[in-house]
Length: 316
Image (cartoon, rainbow, N blue to C red):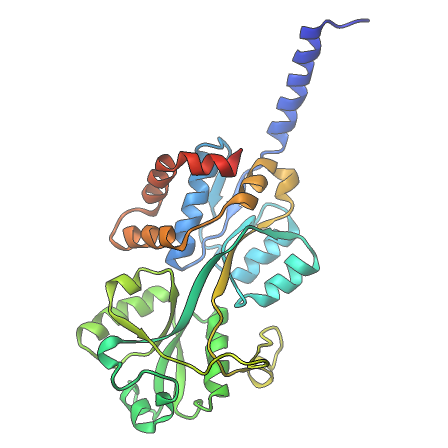
């Protein structure tokens, strides 16, 4: 039996079409709790469901980074994208799945900063970690009357919550200060009233984030980095006792991480994710729009429509 050229091409097209349909599973995107991660999630969803004509969902409540990483490692579609992987904050995830099992891949990172802040109206009194060793300063931040000043270290399930406890211990400040571990939304609601009243408030934050545009903030200076000043073991049971961190933070490298299984389950999306390069200034703009009341999905869809040339370089 012989086939003409048109029959062969038609057969090839059918095979390619069948394989493409089979290899475009719906993509499960994490629902991390901070605004930057949420903005990135909606942009990725808009790209996948818009110009890429594929399927993706932001999975409501998929906010525990460890569970997202475990899902990416399994490759079963329960979790495919970790939208905002801060390094070195999430070193155990990197060690276990990116370098260890090699079941998770990452894109080119963007840069972020993180530190401990006070409103600038407090900067004359508190401008460095040395100032925090003054019992009189700590007493001004004691809201519950237990003799210790309070600082917000992040939500209870954030790696930063442990990181800052390690720092305060390493600086010899544990007897004067204690962490407050509440969700970001809870903290931001309280911060608005505290700053309006010009109350003392000490808190962890990072860039890019809208809070720096909303308020006049000052970052506390710390000891410069030296060899061995940062030795963190967050994956150990005795993480606080066995870890040391008595110097300033390095700039963070922040990645989109994704399940390697997408290379088989949805290769077009896997290819796109590997090429995405985000600009911190653009992320900050997304966050500002969302914080001003715009719907995150609308912000994402508008940006995708207005930046088709850039997105083409990621999707082609």
